Image (cartoon, rainbow, N blue to C red; front, side, top):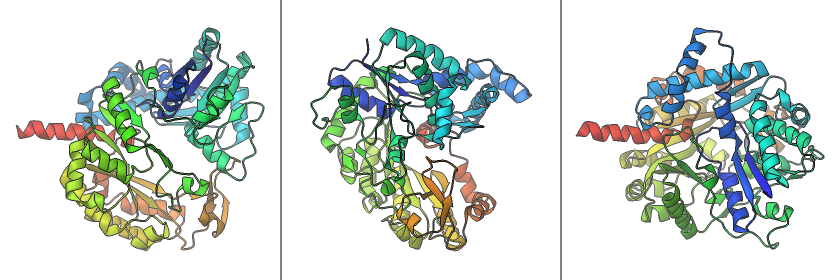
Length: 518
């Protein structure tokens, strides 16, 4: 008998274990609470590829014919030496997901789920998904999986960790099925998206009666209290428990170990950041403990890659890793700083195993960066890119267009910045600004509903410089992306998996370079 089951629902990128429920599992096991952890995203996405589907065209028939080879190839190292072959595999896999899901009135890809008639931003639609679980494309999977689970384990509580909009409707379909089969089970909702919803001034607990408890923020203490465990004091640090996922063959050429050394952001001032708008507090694990955790987890699971999930790795953590190499390749987000522009420090990071750093530069115009309270300097960003390139660390750069301080003039400066540093930018992520509904800018701008729904976290706004979303998208499509320097960078980005698979291409490229030099 299991006291609690924690579920990571579809759809998110099925390339690494879910870190959130691994952390919760560690806390439960530390308190000797019997639990079962299920990556339903991995299981459901695998099961979809086994379903029959109508093949209406030559592409779909070819994709089905090659499906066994594709499923194997995405888990094999040699695929990441050939970007064209990789793109074919991803394109064909997405084609199969689309073919399978078409009859259900939904569109599934490796990284997304969209329903034609239901929105994850409307609580009524979430409740409707729970009322008719049999209509979900994932119904064949969770009907069998949950029926067996409820009979064999008889859990008292089932928790769902929801971090992305693409997980919402499938999760509620699963909740509806559980309610039908075992109405006495206590259902708990947590995760990053639930925290964001609950932080909104408009939150009114619309799922009361369907869900027993919604949890905001770190869930360890709340979860232990709900099941009558713990001592009422804050939970001590516990190591994430990844043993539940050892049978999962994720879509990656080896084990990827995700790890969070902190919650929130140590800077926490950027005006465009939803967490800043939500007032999320920053907390971090002691650096010595982080290093100890990583060393133990690396020894236990032998990962090919460590993925730091922090909003920004702290300077103290980066310094510690530079001084004590992890012995395994790793990547994560870092803030632009003078330290990252130091050749000696970046050389130490490279020796420590750093393959790639994700950098939120946002704009090539200092005025825009200052208006966003980003706290970085464009000149320092330029030096950082040069030093990282010289050190052999790839830069995955994030840019943000359409912020209130930006106009066409400033957007052109961002284009000029990218062109100037085209040889130093490994990958690019281009985003169009969404105004947080409860951020500081929402109080000063003329706004209106962005998405219809009581759970929307963003608002449309009248741009003070007339640089609205349509103008931004036209600029990106007609000028920015068509620049030869930019397009060559964008072509390197792995489709669907983006930054999650980018380090593998960096590693494969270096391996090819070493082989050719011999």
